[in-house]
Amino acid sequence: MALTHDEVIDAAVELLRTHGLADLTMRRLARELQVQPGALYWHVDNKQTLLVQVAGRVLSEITIRGSGSPVTDIRRLAKAIRAAVLPVPDGSDVVALGYALDPDSSPVFGQLRRLVGELAADPGAATDLLVHHVLGSVGDEQNRRLADLPTRGAAAAFDHGLELALAAITATPQPRSAHG
Amino acid sequence: MALTHDEVIDAAVELLRTHGLADLTMRRLARELQVQPGALYWHVDNKQTLLVQVAGRVLSEITIRGSGSPVTDIRRLAKAIRAAVLPVPDGSDVVALGYALDPDSSPVFGQLRRLVGELAADPGAATDLLVHHVLGSVGDEQNRRLADLPTRGAAAAFDHGLELALAAITATPQPRSAHG
DNA sequence: ACCTGAACACCGTTCAAGT
DNA sequence: ACCTGAACACCGTTCAAGT
Image 1 (cartoon, helix red, strand yellow):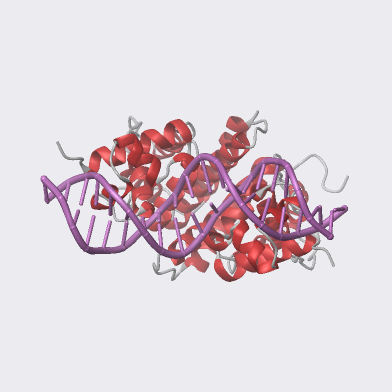
Image 2: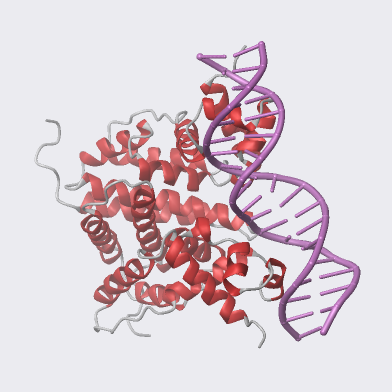
């Protein structure tokens, strides 16, 4: 029974989750799937687009229960993204690539933008600021872990930065209509 | 006349500047310097630490004329970092690695933190937010460029996010003493 | 002290040829 | 339609041996 596109992506996510980006190679992936390296190129165009799809899959399990308050939902979503990406080694690099190449690569970015749109005059810039903070914090933490450096206080630092960003967004002039 | 450590870093920066991270390989670097690959390992420990030093060099030319106002200086510094990193392909990745592994890898980060300290109650979190925004924006733009995607409006988006971050920092309770 | 030569264990990608 | 086999042009790092 032939290999499917989904099996390839699943195996790639598994490899990233357990061994990090340095071990997520096309050859290693082929070995894991018990095919020749060339076989993968029937299912994916190249490594770059495979990584974008891996990023989508990592973010795909995120859901938050709505609270009625946009600020609360944004905070929950930001924390959920951090929680999903942090345990995946090099996850921030992969997700950042996905966000840059296609801001709609995952529904969470769209969801975040909609929520921000209920508060900020410029949802684009505010969403970017939030995403950059989340992925930047996680990236710092993961880079430090990879280099065997301490990461104490990272969660508190993340929260503090998040509150700063939220304060900036809520302090900004509102959009014309709250529920149009 | 033997190779020096500085010549190795200089050649690495040159390679990054002209061809990007994919072409900044130890073997290519050795070829450029007309030595065998193994010779490099007399001057640097490994590729990772070489990259951190490259990041330091990229940021080393940044200077701003002080204006008296911390907010203005922070804004100038943030824009100067963006201006220094943007023309270097994959520069944001390399600089982010340097910032994560050693926040004092470049004096600019220390300078930024001092300026932020004159305004914000928690200079650490506020500086992180700024650095993440700068490197995140530049990273998005560079990733898009690499994938031949349009980058129109990137400068304005950067400025907008910067003003949001600055607003958050200045709106925060001041430190106990302005000039202690 | 500084470098060469040679090796080790890998990469991503392509493509004719097979089934 | 889907995969193998084999090749092409590369990687980072180590280390005995040379000068």
